Image (cartoon, rainbow, N blue to C red):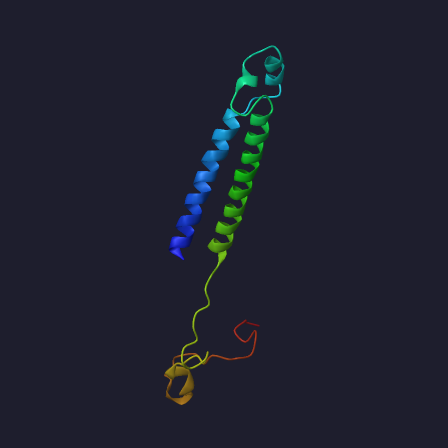
Length: 121
């Protein structure tokens, strides 16, 4: 289970760094006007509009991976395995002082099983 959590944390870290990098690489909405006047964006690797689509889709995929890993780590962090009942199947051992009621010292108070018996009147 520890290896699974470590793997998910590594994937989450890489996706977070990828989202940060891709958001910083993207141009704002005002950058499209500069491309119309020949700022050189049309000669890029993806073309004039291809880079915007590629970067925004990749950012969306990495953001989805980040959210899924976050939810998975939350689920794994709240998971508490059930303790095994063992051979007895859930039977709890009874302490010797309660089962041998007569052998208890006279100064020890006797526990009552009635609700509210310990409340003074």
